[in-house]
Image 1 (cartoon, rainbow, N blue to C red):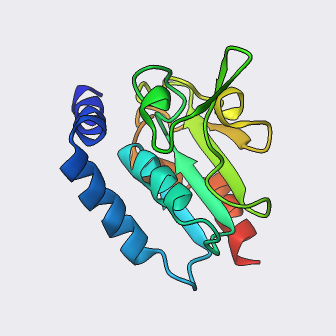
Image 2: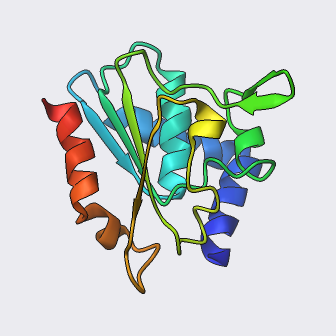
Image 3: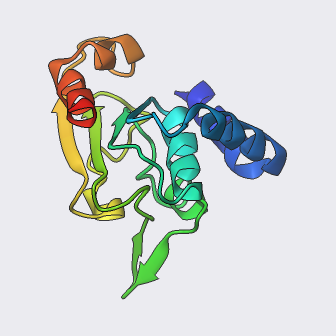
Length: 157
Protein backbone atom coordinates (compact mmCIF):
# COMPACT_ATOMS: atom_id res chain seq x y z
CA UNK A 1 0.00 0.00 0.00
CA UNK A 2 2.75 2.44 0.93
CA UNK A 3 4.50 1.86 -2.40
CA UNK A 4 1.27 2.41 -4.36
CA UNK A 5 0.47 5.62 -2.50
CA UNK A 6 4.04 6.90 -2.97
CA UNK A 7 3.69 6.39 -6.73
CA UNK A 8 0.40 8.27 -6.77
CA UNK A 9 1.90 11.04 -4.65
CA UNK A 10 4.86 11.34 -7.04
CA UNK A 11 2.51 11.52 -10.02
CA UNK A 12 0.41 14.25 -8.43
CA UNK A 13 3.38 16.34 -7.21
CA UNK A 14 5.78 16.11 -10.17
CA UNK A 15 4.45 17.96 -13.22
CA UNK A 16 6.93 16.26 -15.58
CA UNK A 17 6.03 12.76 -14.39
CA UNK A 18 2.36 13.64 -14.63
CA UNK A 19 2.63 14.96 -18.18
CA UNK A 20 4.70 12.02 -19.43
CA UNK A 21 2.33 9.45 -17.90
CA UNK A 22 -0.78 11.19 -19.24
CA UNK A 23 0.80 11.51 -22.68
CA UNK A 24 1.52 7.78 -22.78
CA UNK A 25 -2.13 7.01 -22.08
CA UNK A 26 -3.33 9.57 -24.61
CA UNK A 27 -1.05 8.01 -27.25
CA UNK A 28 -2.66 4.62 -26.59
CA UNK A 29 -6.25 5.88 -26.69
CA UNK A 30 -7.14 6.38 -30.32
CA UNK A 31 -10.33 6.59 -32.37
CA UNK A 32 -10.82 2.81 -32.15
CA UNK A 33 -10.45 2.55 -28.36
CA UNK A 34 -13.74 1.55 -26.78
CA UNK A 35 -12.68 0.34 -23.32
CA UNK A 36 -10.13 1.59 -20.81
CA UNK A 37 -9.38 -0.64 -17.81
CA UNK A 38 -7.19 0.86 -15.09
CA UNK A 39 -5.82 -0.31 -11.74
CA UNK A 40 -4.77 2.14 -8.93
CA UNK A 41 -2.37 4.76 -10.26
CA UNK A 42 -3.51 3.83 -13.75
CA UNK A 43 -7.05 4.84 -12.82
CA UNK A 44 -5.84 8.29 -11.77
CA UNK A 45 -3.79 8.75 -14.95
CA UNK A 46 -6.53 7.35 -17.20
CA UNK A 47 -9.15 9.60 -15.60
CA UNK A 48 -7.04 12.70 -16.24
CA UNK A 49 -6.15 11.57 -19.77
CA UNK A 50 -9.79 10.95 -20.72
CA UNK A 51 -10.75 14.34 -19.29
CA UNK A 52 -8.00 15.91 -21.41
CA UNK A 53 -9.47 14.47 -24.62
CA UNK A 54 -13.08 15.66 -24.94
CA UNK A 55 -15.02 13.73 -27.54
CA UNK A 56 -12.98 10.53 -27.19
CA UNK A 57 -14.78 7.37 -28.31
CA UNK A 58 -14.28 5.36 -25.12
CA UNK A 59 -17.56 3.70 -24.17
CA UNK A 60 -16.51 1.95 -20.95
CA UNK A 61 -14.11 3.11 -18.27
CA UNK A 62 -13.41 0.35 -15.74
CA UNK A 63 -11.49 1.24 -12.59
CA UNK A 64 -10.19 -1.52 -10.32
CA UNK A 65 -9.11 -0.84 -6.74
CA UNK A 66 -8.98 2.86 -7.51
CA UNK A 67 -7.89 5.55 -5.06
CA UNK A 68 -9.73 8.27 -7.05
CA UNK A 69 -12.28 8.97 -4.32
CA UNK A 70 -9.78 9.72 -1.55
CA UNK A 71 -10.39 13.35 -0.60
CA UNK A 72 -7.43 15.72 -0.20
CA UNK A 73 -4.83 13.10 -1.13
CA UNK A 74 -6.19 12.30 -4.63
CA UNK A 75 -9.59 13.77 -5.50
CA UNK A 76 -8.74 17.37 -4.70
CA UNK A 77 -5.51 17.19 -6.72
CA UNK A 78 -6.95 15.88 -9.98
CA UNK A 79 -6.68 17.78 -13.26
CA UNK A 80 -9.03 19.14 -14.24
CA UNK A 81 -9.76 20.28 -10.73
CA UNK A 82 -12.95 18.99 -9.16
CA UNK A 83 -15.85 21.39 -8.94
CA UNK A 84 -17.11 22.61 -5.58
CA UNK A 85 -20.87 23.06 -5.31
CA UNK A 86 -22.55 23.87 -2.04
CA UNK A 87 -19.50 22.65 -0.15
CA UNK A 88 -19.46 19.31 -1.97
CA UNK A 89 -16.47 18.43 -4.14
CA UNK A 90 -17.46 16.75 -7.41
CA UNK A 91 -14.83 15.23 -9.69
CA UNK A 92 -15.09 15.86 -13.44
CA UNK A 93 -16.81 13.14 -15.48
CA UNK A 94 -14.17 11.61 -17.81
CA UNK A 95 -16.27 11.48 -20.96
CA UNK A 96 -19.55 12.23 -22.60
CA UNK A 97 -23.03 11.13 -21.54
CA UNK A 98 -22.62 7.76 -23.28
CA UNK A 99 -19.58 6.74 -21.22
CA UNK A 100 -20.24 3.94 -18.75
CA UNK A 101 -17.90 4.05 -15.76
CA UNK A 102 -17.73 0.97 -13.56
CA UNK A 103 -15.65 1.12 -10.39
CA UNK A 104 -14.88 -2.25 -8.80
CA UNK A 105 -13.39 -2.48 -5.31
CA UNK A 106 -12.71 -5.14 -2.69
CA UNK A 107 -13.62 -4.28 0.91
CA UNK A 108 -10.12 -5.37 1.94
CA UNK A 109 -8.33 -3.25 -0.67
CA UNK A 110 -6.59 -0.56 1.37
CA UNK A 111 -5.51 1.42 -1.71
CA UNK A 112 -9.15 1.88 -2.69
CA UNK A 113 -9.93 3.58 0.62
CA UNK A 114 -13.17 5.00 -0.82
CA UNK A 115 -14.98 2.02 -2.35
CA UNK A 116 -17.95 3.88 -3.82
CA UNK A 117 -17.00 6.69 -6.20
CA UNK A 118 -20.56 7.96 -6.67
CA UNK A 119 -20.31 10.63 -3.96
CA UNK A 120 -17.14 11.98 -5.61
CA UNK A 121 -18.09 11.65 -9.30
CA UNK A 122 -21.86 11.38 -9.46
CA UNK A 123 -24.58 8.78 -9.46
CA UNK A 124 -23.75 7.62 -12.99
CA UNK A 125 -20.71 5.69 -11.72
CA UNK A 126 -21.56 2.01 -11.45
CA UNK A 127 -20.13 0.88 -8.13
CA UNK A 128 -19.46 -2.83 -7.58
CA UNK A 129 -17.77 -4.81 -4.84
CA UNK A 130 -15.85 -8.04 -5.23
CA UNK A 131 -14.14 -10.39 -2.83
CA UNK A 132 -10.57 -11.09 -3.91
CA UNK A 133 -9.77 -13.10 -0.80
CA UNK A 134 -6.27 -12.66 0.55
CA UNK A 135 -5.29 -10.85 -2.67
CA UNK A 136 -7.58 -7.86 -2.13
CA UNK A 137 -5.53 -5.43 -4.24
CA UNK A 138 -4.18 -7.88 -6.84
CA UNK A 139 -4.89 -6.84 -10.44
CA UNK A 140 -5.30 -10.45 -11.59
CA UNK A 141 -8.03 -11.07 -9.03
CA UNK A 142 -9.90 -7.99 -10.24
CA UNK A 143 -9.40 -8.72 -13.94
CA UNK A 144 -10.66 -12.30 -13.68
CA UNK A 145 -13.83 -11.42 -11.81
CA UNK A 146 -17.06 -11.72 -13.79
CA UNK A 147 -18.01 -8.13 -12.84
CA UNK A 148 -14.92 -6.84 -14.64
CA UNK A 149 -15.73 -8.96 -17.70
CA UNK A 150 -19.28 -7.64 -17.75
CA UNK A 151 -18.06 -4.04 -17.47
CA UNK A 152 -15.66 -4.54 -20.38
CA UNK A 153 -18.41 -6.17 -22.44
CA UNK A 154 -20.55 -3.01 -22.08
CA UNK A 155 -17.96 -1.07 -24.06
CA UNK A 156 -17.64 -3.70 -26.75
CA UNK A 157 -21.33 -4.04 -27.59
